[in-house]
Amino acid sequence: MKLLGVTGCPTGIAHTFMAEKALKAAAGKLGCQIKVETNGAIGVENALTEADIKGADAIIVASDKSVDLDRFNGKPVLEVSVGDGVSKAEELVQACLSGKVPVRRGAVIQNHNPGENQNAARQIYKHLMNGVSHMLPLVVAGGVLIAISFLWGIYSFDPASDQYNPVAAMIKSVGGYSMGLMVTVLSGFIAQSIGGRPGLLAGLVGGAIAAGTDAGFLGGIVAGFLSGYLSQGVVRSLRRLPRQLEGLKSIFIVPIVTIGGVGILMMLFAQPCAALNQWMMAALSKIQNTSPVLLGIVIGCMCAFDMGGPVNKAAYVTGTVLLGQGNYYFMAGVSAACITPPLVLAIAATIKRNRFSEDDRTAALVNYVLGFTHITEGAIPFAAKNPLKVIPILMLSSSISAIATYLMRVEVPAPHGGFLILGLVNKPVVWVLCILLGSFVGAVLYILVTPVSKKKTALSEDLLKEETVCLSLENTGKEQVIDEMVAMLYEDGVLQDAEAFKKEIIKREKISSTAFGNGIAIPHGKSPAVRMPRVAVGLSKKGISFDSSDGEPVYAVFMIAVGEGEDEAHLKLLSALSKKLMEPGFLSRLKECTRKDQMIRLITEE
Image (cartoon, rainbow, N blue to C red; front, side, top):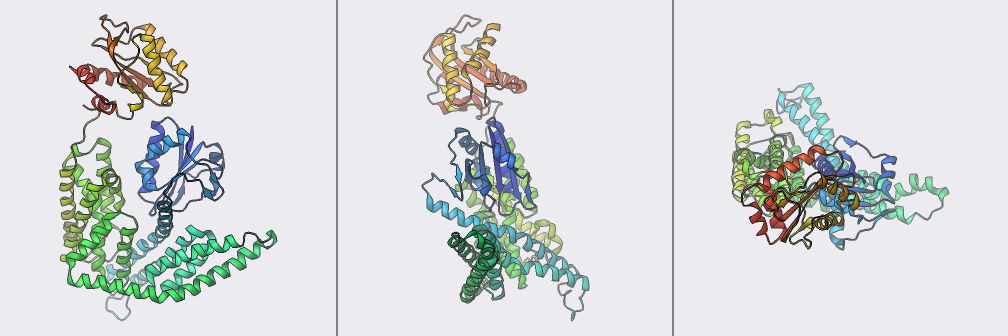
C-alpha cells in the first residue's frame, strides 16, 4: 500500500519533523510505503507531486497550520492535528490500511466524528497558529537584532548619547522594522488560513490598522478572523457571477468589499481592543511590581501548559510587546519558563536512565540542545504519554525558574535564542542557575512519579498483538493447529494469502520438526504473502502431537511470520524467542496466564 503524509506545526521546528519520523516508522512497521511532505520553518520539503498523489491509496495530513488540501480531492484523506501525528502515528497508518478513511470531495471533508464542536475549535486553533507561525520568525529576528545593537551600549541608537554608534543604530532600525510587522503578519496569515488570498489582503490591512491604533496583539487576532470569515463569505456570495466577470470580481469587487469592510470594522473595534490591551499590560505591570512570585507562577504555568500552543504564545507575545517598551524584566521570566520543560526531561534522563526506554532516553537527551536554544516543544512527546502527571510537574518547574528569575531581577533584551544570547543578559550566570533550579526540581519530581522502564527483548509488543493470541487452541493435530494459527494471522490482516504462507510453514516442518522439547514448538516461515512481521501464540490445554524429538506433546505454539528478504529479522526473532522459551519455568508461567495482555507482557519483558 502506498501512503502519503503531510506534516506541519506552527513554528515548523519540532513537531513537523517529529510527526514525519513517527509516520515513517509506523508505516515501516506495518509494511507499507509512505512519502511525507514537511511544511517546516524553511518552507515545504519533499513536496508531493501530482504523480505521488495519483498513485496514493490514502493520505494522512497531520498539521496545525494551513496546507493545500484541494490537491487531494477524490482521495481518502485523514486530517488530524500534528500532535496526533506524533503520538498516534501507528493508529493513523492502521486506519489507512483498514480502508476506513473518508474520501475528500471538493472543499468538504467527510467527517464521521460526531464531535463537531471539537472539530470547529481545532479549526480555529489551526487558523490562529498559521498566523503565529508566520509572525514568529519576524519577532525572533527583529528581537535578536535589537539585542545585538545593545552590545554597543543600551543607548547606542540615540544620536544624542555618548554611546551612539551608526552601525548599532542601523541594526536596531532593521530589527525595529521586523518587529513592527508582527501584528500585521499575524492578522494577515490568520485571514489567509480562513479565506485564502482575499483573506490575506484584507487581513494585512486590518492588522496594519490594529498596529497603528494600539489595538496590538489582540486587535491583530480580531482583524485576522474578521478578515478571513468576511472574505470567505464575500467570495461564496459571488460564485454565481458570470465567468466573464471573474477578473473584475478578483481584482476589483472582492478587494474593495473585504478591505473596506474590515477597515471600517477595525476602526470601530480598535479603541476597545486598545483599552483591553492597556488593561492587561497594567494588570501585569501591577503584578510585576507588587508580587514577582505571583507573576512567576502565572508565566510559568502559561508557558508549560501547552508548550508552544496558544497559551504559551500569549505569554511569549506579551513579553515581546513589553520588550519594545523597554521592559526586559518580563521577558527574562518568559524565556526561563520556556527553556525549563525540555531540560527537566534531559536532566531526568541523565540522573535516572532506568525511567526511560532506550529510544525515549535518546530523545530526552536531545532536549539539552532544544532547551538551551529555547525550543519548548521537545517536552511534548513525554507529556503526551502521561499528561496528568507530567504537565503539572512541568508547570511547577517552569514557575520556579520564572519566580527565581524575577526575584533576582534578571533582564533579557532578546525574545528568543535561549543560552545563545547569554552575552546580552545582565546577569547571565544567575539566569542560568535560576533555570537549572526549576529544571532540577522538575527532574526529581519526574523521576519520583515515573516507574522504572521495563527492558524489552527483541520480541517487542509491536510483534505480538492480542488479535493473534489464543489462550485455548481447539485442535490437537499438528496440521490442524497450523491451520488454526495461520487463520488467526490472515483474519488480522498480517497475511495476504493464507495458503501461500502455510506452504512455507509446512515446507520447513518437512525438513525437521520445530518442536524442540519442553512442550514448546516454533513453526516459522518467510513469504511474500506476509504484510508485516508478527508472532502468533497459541496455548493448548489438551496437548498437541507435534512430532517432538522427545515424543512429548506440545502445549505452547509460537508461529513466526516474516516477509520475503527479511532474513536478518527472521533469525533475530527466532534466536530471541528460543532464548526466552528456554528460561526455567517459563512454560509453567505461560500456562498460568488468564488474559492475552498478561501473556504478551510475560513474553516481551525481561
